[in-house]
Amino acid sequence: MIYSGDLFPDWRGNAFIGGLSSEAIIRVQLDGESAREVERFPMGRRIREIEQGPDGAIWVLEDGTGGRLLKLMPR
Image (cartoon, rainbow, N blue to C red):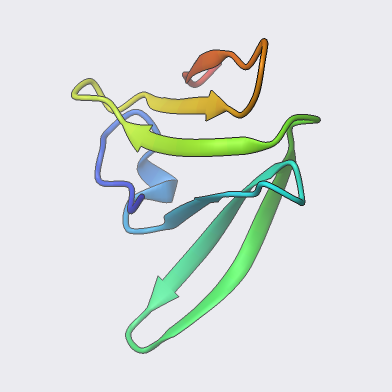
């Protein structure tokens, strides 16, 4: 998912990748033709999907039985 919302303005234009084996959310900064990992958020569960909601919140779906749907908002 490439973030375009207003809730996390510093992340606008960054890509977010859900890690199945890494059990993390990876934030990737895109710059023209290059990309680099700039942050990794350990979640302790396999991450199946990441989407942006219409309000700019980031929604995360955990994998497997008992997996949760999480809404990420700024503090």
